[in-house]
Length: 273
Image (tube, rainbow, N blue to C red; front, side, top):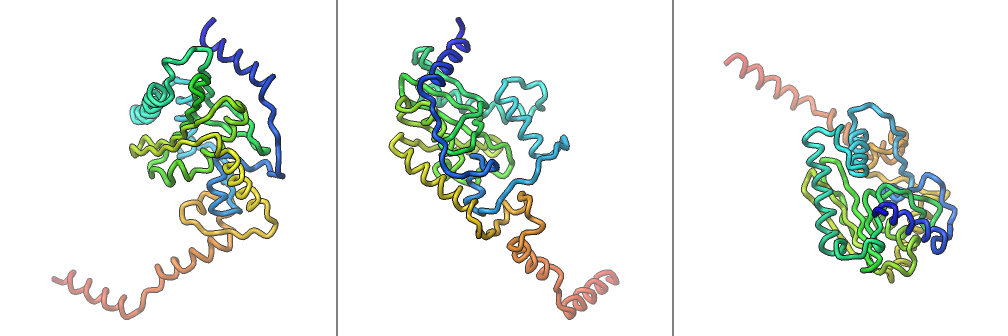
């Protein structure tokens, strides 16, 4: 029997005997781990509907994550392949070192790649790569950011990664003490990591519940953010976005007439010379 078969057997056994999700809260279906950080910035935030164009950043992100999940790189160009390979190398280094993967018994090693797991709340989520070493009572989670702007937050501040920890502890209660979470931006050669301990689980759930409550609050108010707002489906009609952008437009077009006259005179002189 190969490793994948044994891994599947372990998962089925855990699902039958241990995994008993307790849903709480009245979280609407649009909440997801990847949305939590954005909602913490603006409780009204929602992603624009995805439309496949073939050349957008979202399309490329889906392509790269598919390659990371399946280890099939046939659709990648050279630069994209290097991007995915950097993440694989990072995973291997942490597996070998901190997770002690190679020395653990095969029946104590579990890999969960792009699998939808239940949370303590009503949402579920997908993780890029997850490795659980039951012998060491440790797990390792990585999230690859494929953009070219780099990381916009540290791993310890990422609610998305904290939500993933909640999912692992819910799935393996009492079996995992520590979880290392890693944000990776291979295109900018940035990484950020943090280690959570099982004793922090309750505080993590409290953090997440606060964000969910803010999104469900009936009198919530939008908050402007120059990076997130253009990605939001409400951007064009958001009053806070309009307030923030109008002064910028006015500053751009409101040039005093004397300055324009002076510039025209100077330009005429240069052309004559």
